[in-house]
Image 1 (tube, one colour):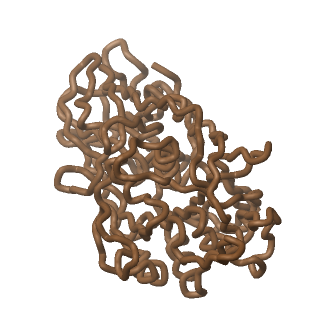
Image 2 (spheres, one colour):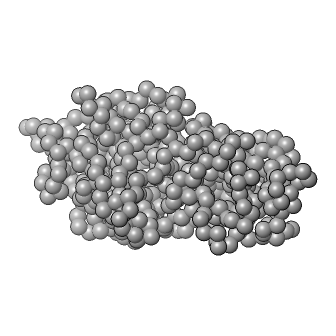
Length: 455
């Protein structure tokens, strides 16, 4: 049995393609985001289609340049990748130059394997501050592809010898899909409610296109951002078909409702039905990404038992899924110091000036994460180890606060706290962290590559 640790760690800042180390006959495989599995060990894999005006696999090295058959940089293209709202930098975005249009995004949950790049398609990755530099192998018109997970922007650029910068608009991730312009984002569904207003967080992050479930029936108001489906939350999470047409599904606080004991003030949260569990599992197994916060935690505890252990309201670990259902919902919120334990997240938070993290409105506590048996994207038996992105300081202990784990081609992301945004406030640190982790768990299936040498 293999051991699979949740990927998504930050890659050392990549600035150039190490052209001297690439054999022309060997294609590359690069992720749609942080570059896991950039190098493809299968040398028999054919390269991409021929570039206009030439043949794939042919390249004329510059006089006195590198060895024959190795591309030589005639210049470098630099820029900065930012979120759809225009200011927040994006770390570890894949940036590459090509003569071919990328494959369109499938219209349903799917196994997102890494794209193939030939050695003549130079690439790089953005640093924590969003900046990047990519070598240029030829002047003239090419396509610039900027991609993080399933967010992608493609623009035609006119390249020159020497150093040049990109138009900032070309490296701003799109907030909605417009394939005619070269903009693609994942289809996102959200169960809305009156408690954790992730819909407003999405709006502030510049993500305009997402689908709302739960506006009808009342009691929640239906005037928030996003595209209203007119369907209930149950219409989404109980239907394999409805779930399966999405790439990301967000289930914030109280998706299953809750009851409150007026005498004690204690909450008991709802849990998924067997049909809902089956639909959620099928969605993730197919490659979907599921994000769950606090009072909706039973979606994960009941559907994927063992990966995460929560405390009940009396701070006793809930080790048996048949016991204490719904009792991890706390009677009141707590604001606690947060620590980014993932190196990539920590470097990024430092780069954006958010090193002093306060996690606001935590309504549940996680005791621990545990490895569990499972299968990888190829169906091979593996041990899946959950990844802790953020911890919360509670009573001198560092408790897991943001956790993700893989399931075949899909991923599950859990936080014990709200995003807790509203329409008028500036972006909170935890809203920015949501953006980072959502993009990271949305990356393609593969492994981190060795970083190429710098320029």
